[in-house]
Amino acid sequence: LAKTTQPISMDSYEGQEVNITCSHNNIATNDYITWYQQFPSQGPRFIIQGYKTKVTNEVASLFIPADRKSSTLSLPRVSLSDTAVYYCLVGYGQNFVFGPGTRLSVLP
Amino acid sequence: EAQVTQNPRYLITVTGKKLTVTCSQNMNHEYMSWYRQDPGLGLRQIYYSMNVEVTDKGDVPEGYKVSRKEKRNFPLILESPSPNQTSLYFCASSPRGYGEKLFFGSGTQLSVL
Image (cartoon, rainbow over all chains, first blue to last red; front, side, top):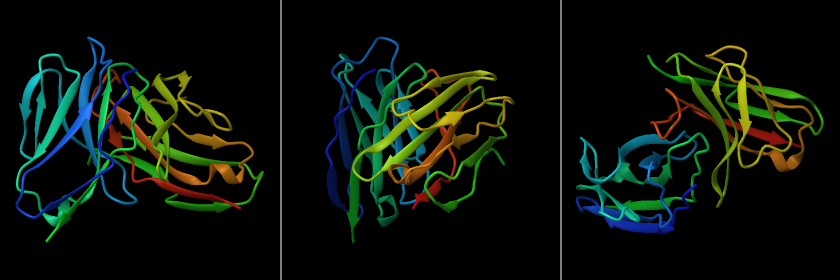
């Protein structure tokens, strides 16, 4: 199962765009890339998923280069409520492995 | 409303006293799994189930049991809890696994004294 590496923490200010990059050098052909958001004492919540190129939904964009060895979650114009831990998850099978995630702090 | 329901939300127990944490989903999902979350370690998978009567070990299965007798329920059993099992536990489900979106419950905070 592909191992992921993300920055441990990031700070941003309200209204800025935030980009969080995840490295997954040994991603397999069938693996999808999925990002989750987690607030304290709550279960993770799905944000976005992609396989290649770019995916956009109402809350985020996901950029995946051609070699798929990394991916970048982009959060446009963050607010204080976006302060959370963000997890990058890579896999296809049944054993989903979460890394430590990136703790994003949005400052006023 | 589509959801994964865990009970109880908080549980304090003593070493060696058997306990069960229940998990139920109303989305007819085939795949269900259990995770524990500890500070600095992220979420680690304990067990997962691809369908009724099909279960398999995750990364940290020692000290835990599960069963999947019905599609909607996936209880986590601690036969003889120990203090190192003090943790925040999450149940999750998805339609079939295979990289699909996971739906998580609200969590169970377990303290073993």
